[in-house]
Image 1 (cartoon, rainbow over the protein chains, first blue to last red):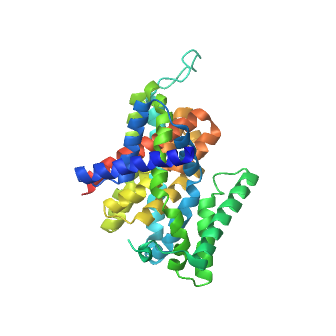
Image 2: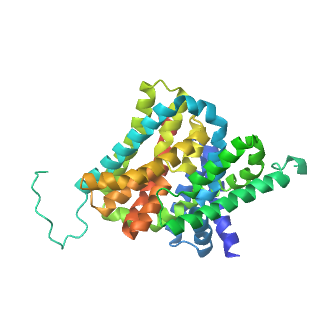
Image 3: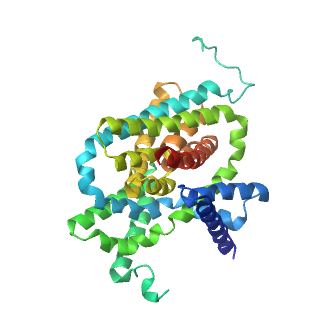
Length: 127
Length: 234
């Protein structure tokens, strides 16, 4: 029964997402709107219902299984992919390495140190 | 609706491919646990490679695999909504360091998508490919829907996100070590924004703190980028 309720929570969020998308004529996927709605409702509700947690954790833990058929579907694009394989790889390498570095660096520069009580190593560079 | 209008019944052949997909996922998951290796041994990637090799080797039409495979794809929307639960669970994370969190996440996200789209422009990729690459800093289930909305190729968008995630997880430890990025929160944030679900799983394995930053960054960044991209592209 809890699992049914959990699925109902997800379906109701999706339904609300679809409704908002239709009414507001948005080009945003309904499941993304549904995430926003679900987080807002959980905030009002004050906790995650047990059934919802069960279903959500199952779906998230095994998401890789559900995506295998999507990746296999890339076979339909194999000819096109073959033509752009090298430039595409180059793009993916650069646009992965650079943001990994920059994102972590910015946060580390801006965020207060985690443990303020612990004396920090003296810094030599001025920043 | 008449019974004949229901989604294609998988039939004997579809059920075979469905079961084979399940068996591969289970087997590869066990293998990964045995190897104690998460970065290289992704059941998703290897499962898809083995299935593609089978279909190509035996000269079987993709549509016949999809008779069974499509049944797993129907859960995509529900999986996406489920991301709301970890976002809610980790909401406290953002309170402690809201400004650095949002600044780093926003810049990282714009850089990941922007650098890909800009390079695609220089390399003369067409509009559909550029729109597809724009979704690369969104977690894969959301990228699928967004690519569809902005005129990209949904299947390729997911493939790009998944490949990025795997590659990112492999190189991230070296990048962090080389540049002295030792803050676990910073590492989690970067993994969540750039390498999505695969990076978040890796972050959870390293520490709870890193995992909660990665999970929240993945979810919030996915939602924000999904909300903004359609306005930029349409």
